[in-house]
Length: 275
Image (cartoon, rainbow, N blue to C red; front, side, top):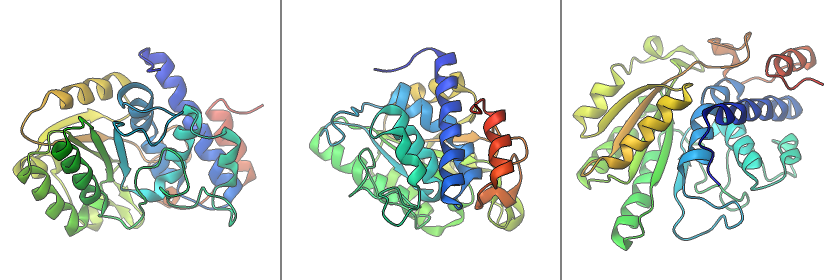
């Protein structure tokens, strides 16, 4: 069942953030910063937009999602658990050697995961294949691909972007999580990718700029993308790395480290998850 109420979706996104902190804390490793920045995007997709069934994860006509920035798996796992693909308590097993919830998503082990990702730059190519196959089979599947802004420094992204437009993949929606931070610092200082919208427009995409934490704007953008014909859509979602946890926000150092116990308790308190 899709959630239409904006406040309910915001509550879901907050629970997703709690799950991110819970999983990374228990793992004592992981990537909280980019997971927190993409939480609202994933929440809107899974709870409001995508044609999926948690009781039938392999349904033939389901929509697909490719989390190209696979290191933000904690966000995807939290969303999938909240949606009911598996028990929420399982997220505490993140990165455990015996767990199926490894540091990057594995489509062979985790229900609801459509693509094994982690090698940055490859997700859009995978999504292209899914979208093209759906067109050839007339299945009516929509494919969503989420990339990081640092990730689009990879050359393969732009080869894939040419392919998306060449085959007129209007059932493909690319989302750029534009938090302007990557592991080494600010994206515009490490390797400037701006203006992102104009670049994708020049590659043949319809482009939409949104506040990536505004649920209403995200819904409107995804609905607009569904109406675009003859070309793919790129949604540039302006976000804040570490969103929702004050001491993590806009700090590159939280790209890939886990909070200690004191930081965990503070983060959960801020997210309303403390006992």
